[in-house]
Length: 566
Image (cartoon, rainbow, N blue to C red; front, side):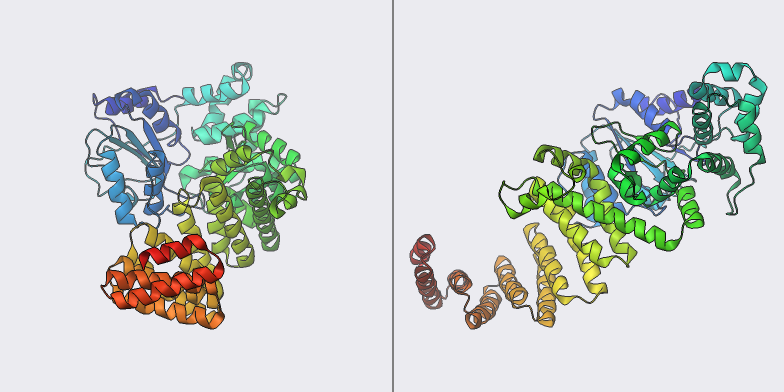
């Protein structure tokens, strides 16, 4: 709206026919909408399309570069190695972009350090970055400062929301209102939504209310004041229950909510929450994707104001209770998401029947779609629960439920990058709460993923740490598993002497516990590493012991394999 000249300049940069700008700044001025629209119109010159990723969390924190790089790789349909660090992932992004011709839109960058590791070396790709200030230190940036709309364009934007009649009867007041809004599209959208829901109100009414509204107590940059005042006016005009739901949406993970999230936060029914969310969309307070399972996004420019208002109007105990309700609802939805994949008659499937109908899924396909759409918010929920520090028990339940749901719908291998991060969160909680048994379990899971993705040295370090944690917890399963895994890792590294030593330690523990199946398996592993090392006498003794153990267990295929090795 009102950006035709600037849009043409940006389009010129896309097609290479003009010295177009490359970054935009200014609060609530449309820095998210304009580059996306222009990138779409120029995408014909970039046949591999437009990729858009956000670089700032709804809470205002910069998104870690490794997470942004992983998101880009995911959008390109490329596998992300579990546990890969920032340098490895950034290099993978550059390699992927080296053979493509696309537009990379980096939204809401905090500084140049966020953008630089993601820049492709391929001149056939174009990067468009939005930021609240100049991205100094990056070569070849062509900057553009994006300010408020001119009066005519601002009035047109208002007319789209409320109709031309109310503008025509008092055009000067409409221009005054546009000035009160600073020409900011976000502020104009909020005021337009407020007027659209009040057909009897005049433009003069809202202009006077907005003019008389005092600035909030929080210090605001001069450019942000019109939006802050427009937001206050709209919020304070809401019914009390709806205003409370709006404030509580500041707790929505990743700035994304669905009807269940809002219902749990506010303690109301799912249908009432859904209606309220739809009303917020009409007011310009939320955006929605319009999908079968609709998600509602909080505009980035409103998120800090929502958080400030929540802290100002609601007690900390109420906020914590709302957060706990939301996480508990998420746990139950994840449990239902996994249970629907289980065969009928199983314990998990029987528990599903005991859940309220609103929490259940009609079939596994619907549950899988919900899990895919909500995955960014679900992962953010886990991170927020762990960062809270006061909800560790709930955080562990949430992570466990999410791990099981991802494994059930996507498989352990496909979900490995997400599982790696989740096991890391479990480890954070276990270390904070001094829970050695949970530490051992998380370390074993992380080490397994390291081993499967070609990082045996990292796996070895974690397996040893898991052994220490297992011993501290008196957990014989964890210590035995850790010793056996250390042996397997040394075997992979070709150090058969150390491998046989660790397999022997694991076997000694199994012998004291009388765990015959594990004993037979470990005799076989010892036979294998002694064979590789050329110690055939030791290998023969162990293969014979393995065959005898499998014979006693009645496992004829395993016995046959051991005899064949012998």
